[in-house]
Length: 605
Image (cartoon, rainbow, N blue to C red; front, top):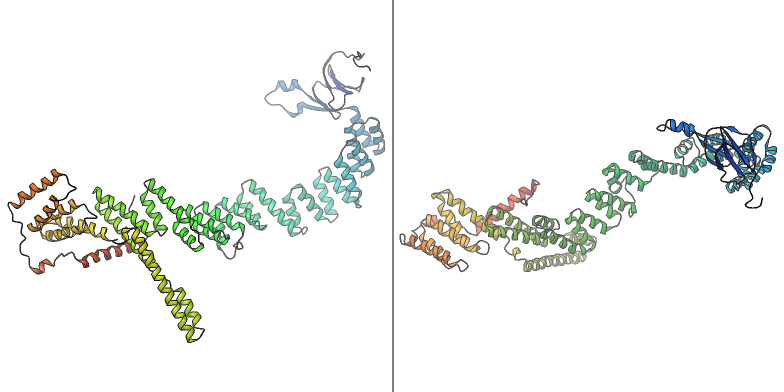
């Protein structure tokens, strides 16, 4: 027809229509309670229907029963959606089922449509008419179908062809049965593997078919199935069967089975080979939950020393970190340790900084910081007992440093001696000389380290002076308040404090001497103490004047002379070197007992 010409086609009582989306010659139309399908202007036999047309495609019409839907809008049903087939599609089905492939092919040729060609190709495949099937696939532009026909043409066994056709039509159970009847379980396993039905693959492989590779793949994929559903225990079982260690690590981590995870790095029966990348993964997982020792062992077996040191730093295991750094020549650890200590000090967390230095075996730094804290307490005069404890800890850190620097390892001598034992007497003599030289060098090196540290930190020279000062200070007060019988001991302890003006406040020292001497009626000692107080330049003038007035009141009544004391009494409560060494021994013994009971020596922050 020429464009724009008015058609003589006319229909009455039409209330809905739908063009076919894939063929402009086809039109569906509703008239009253009938549905007509027009090919051009020629109608097919009508079908009774009251549905509203939704889609017309592939010779199939989809309609919806809106009246029924609106009657119960809250509970719609799929039954309200109806599919109608055109006459050509119905006739093709009838010919295929009642006549045969040849007549159906001629009918489709006369009424060509991709849907009819697909229907013909499927029927031809089921009857293994490969020539007709290939022609139909070509006419409906189904490239995959054409390739299937070519593949089937190369298969000689009809049963195998039928199994492949069943797979094409997604009749997998039927295809599996055909493969079993042919005694080809391997093909059934391959089919299930292509489908991803790994449970069925494992079942078939358990019947004696397949190989270890396929069974391992099945275990891995089943493990993945459970892993995706967070069923870690089941996933771990299948990963274990497949020796999929990497994925099993994740399951054990999610299950919080850290002992089994650590066994991969530490248990000789289960551990991974040296240098395996999976050991680093194990170390990372163990480090994330704070298991430092096993994590470090995993990193070391993975030959990743830097990761082991980073793990120790992250988990605040500075002693182990420093040890690893020294063994493997990692000087960067010192800078990191210093930065972290500065951070703690900037935040006012001084006792944590002390603990950090102690764990890192930085004994001089720990001693210096402890002494500074103690000295600050002495200046504030808030808690002398706590200050004494801190001085004790500082002194113990100094002792540890000295012991470490002077500790001579005899391994070199032992080794040399053993080697020399296999040689002559001259060889033994040379080995002994070399061992002696090594020990001498080690001793000199330790002494030089101690001298260098002492030049930087004066605390190392007189580690116990703070302890002695606070011990005498508290001893003097204790005896003073004990009464007349202990006044002499109080005075002698106070007089000994005159040697510790670098630690205690001079005003406190000489005030205590004056007080204890006055009560002990040793007025010459008392007078000397007041003279010291009056000459303290850092005191304001009014305070010195107060001391002068008090001295005037005392010594107008009492001459500044000491009574005669028998020689044997002079030796009582004497503060000498032996007494000071006893202080050191007492606290070293006490702290050793505390350390043996696993109690913290550091006072609370």
